[in-house]
Image 1 (tube, one colour):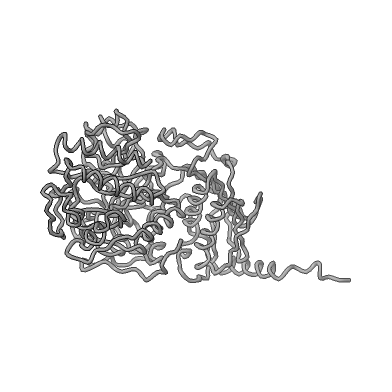
Image 2: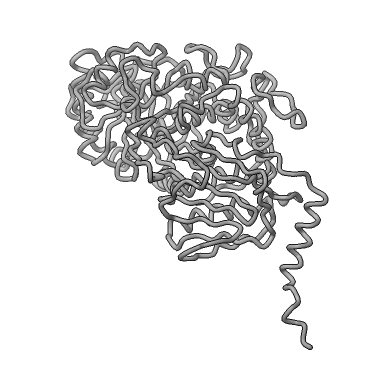
Length: 569
């Protein structure tokens, strides 16, 4: 009798041996389904349904190009630490397997209450009860596999970031780790409270190269932040090439704070940043700061200055002294050319025009300038964003004010909202990541106060500005100004662990807001950052795992993370 047909395949035997050895030698998964940051909208753990990723797993995905790209990113994420090949397989109706990503309208799994809609927490999000919306996802973990379902590839991508957090911290290792890759069982349904969630990187005071910006994008994507605001121009340096005004970059970009060499992004550099961000479902928001903060531009083109005299390059940190001439038609030629070129390179809907601290352009001269620039932005097909100082200017369709105040009683901004403006909230005393954590933090400022992790977390964007309803809040953003920040490691040190706090305020329902629970969930990310070689501040208010305990950065400097491969994409 031929028994060959009854013999298990070699792969099946290997898998059985692997599972048996893992069950005998490895401890159970320490991660819980509810440990995710930002907190998911609905979570239903099932301790009996833990899943272990097998060595022969494939990623099965709907045959949509964008969904396939998310599946490829999931495989790219898991391969280094697991050592598994993880092929990506396209299936029109992926019904089962260890890892399944599917584009489909999803309903809550059995036993999970109907999730609150985004509209119930922020009406601007506009999702109905049966939809996951533009960014939501559902994740189901059973003993046989993990399924992520979403209505969009963006939702799938956010689900992948959640799966990443549900795996052991060793998943962040750049080389294979011998462990069981266990995912806690259960189901969750998740979608954002606010549609705009971002961070700002000032690349003008100190210039940061493309590789550094790409790594910042990775940090945003990890916590479901979907906008990167690049502060591209200021007194100390102009950081983006403009073909019609070439000296902006070659002359205006040659300086930075304390006299460093500066630098700028070529057209190819900027497009690479935009493309890399888009693959990670992050929208780039470029800022050209006007009419003030323009010394670098005036150095390159003195015809824009009120006195037509080129000022010397500026490498200090004062503000409010420079401005383009609001009475000159040449100024508006310049603005139209620059914003037109930047808009053409930027697929996202936003153009940020700055507008803050223009102390020498007052009254009607200032509001007239802003109103004309708002019309120029509209002519590019983009929506204007500006710091909240532009509020007194006439309303432009769809315009967004970025509020960075420290007192929520702001009558001028509330009036602009009544005229139709929406807000991005970046309160200086909660969300400005260039503020020191404590008096002895070696870098940063304290003009808005000290911002430890709890202060970054303990505020509500939906009620923060008096007279501004939640449905007028587009979202939140955490700015990092870089007068004292000079390296990637210093960026990471100031970002982490505060950036996840801001991310949670932007993503999670208000009902999940709880400092005690947040600090416990956040603590589990320390080992992840350490494994990935990411610098961070070991904030004393966070109960970091004892086995990973290490001294914080001494005041003499910030540790440089291990070298990582240059990102591609």
